[in-house]
Length: 147
Image 1 (cartoon, rainbow, N blue to C red):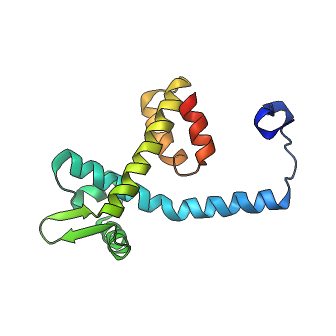
Image 2 (tube, helix red, strand yellow):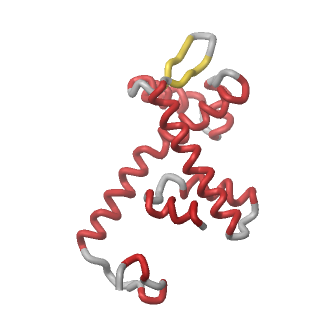
C-alpha cells in the first residue's frame, strides 16, 4: 500500500525510522528560523497595503512585543535586504521582502480556508493559522487547498 493511500488507523504510533525522524526535526528547526521573518514581512506588507506605510510602533503593537524587539528584528531584515528603513517615513519592503510576504500570506489564507472548512470559528482559524502556516509541507498545503 502506498503512503498516500494509508488510512489513519494504519499509521504506526511507535518510534519512526531514524532518517524520517531526523528529517522531521530538521524541517521543524528550519521552519522556526524563518517563521519570524515571514511574520514580520507579512505584517509589514499588510500595513503598507492598508495605510501606505509600516511604522515600528505599530509593528510592535500588532505583534505584542516591545519596540526594542522590533528594532532588533528590523535591523536583521535590513541586513538580509528584505526591508528598507527610511527615517521619519517608516519601513518598506524590498522586492525580495515583498515576495516572501506574498508567499506567506498565500499560505496563511490556505490554512485559514482549510480550518474554516472544518468548521473552526473564524477567530480561532485566524489564530491557529499563524502557527500552522509555517510548519506544513507544500504537499500538506496542497491537500489543504484541495479540501
